[in-house]
Length: 246
Image (tube, rainbow, N blue to C red; front, side):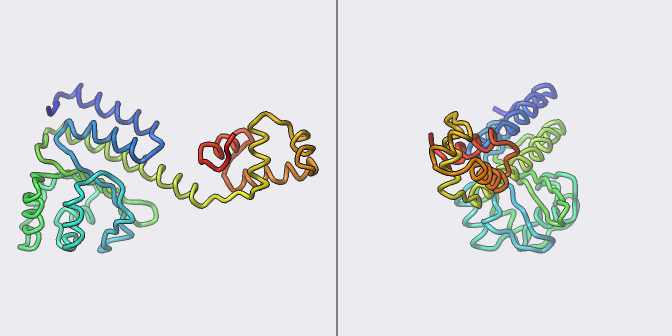
């Protein structure tokens, strides 16, 4: 059921903001976003980053939960080349509905074909939030809807939620990239595991038959590589990332 009303929509937005800040995985973030935008008629969504104007989207730069059949059709047939919503996003900063585009200008036959394809897949409308990044790239959050709410208050709620969704998606992707790139030596893992188990550095040195200075050297290297500010945080991060087991 689509919910309207300013107070209800504001609560939806605030509920998602809290969930986005707490999310630490892609599935968790997508579930939270899907729950809220689904109540406004949008059941698929994608966050995409484009290197610059005129560039083609890449599946590697997609984050979200969009219809796999539509994704395959859209990418396989290169519909992005004539997508009017994508073209508008390249030159606008405000969010807009797909239906807005036809009121702004005459669509070309190729652009109308893209919209016809979307309707064939059941998407009656969509909502796009463009974001310009400092490096010149363009980020988009695109919502695909089958029974959408076009109320101005609903648009404001979707805009706010889309911005927070994109920010949380970038944070999670950055964390995953960092985790994939982190490598600890076996000795560093031993030192961290013993420290996490409550051993003092002098005890770790004695158990491993190395000097306390060497223990500290291993911890310094691991903290630097992991981006951890303290040894306590290092232990927490290493365990969370599955690099060390107790």
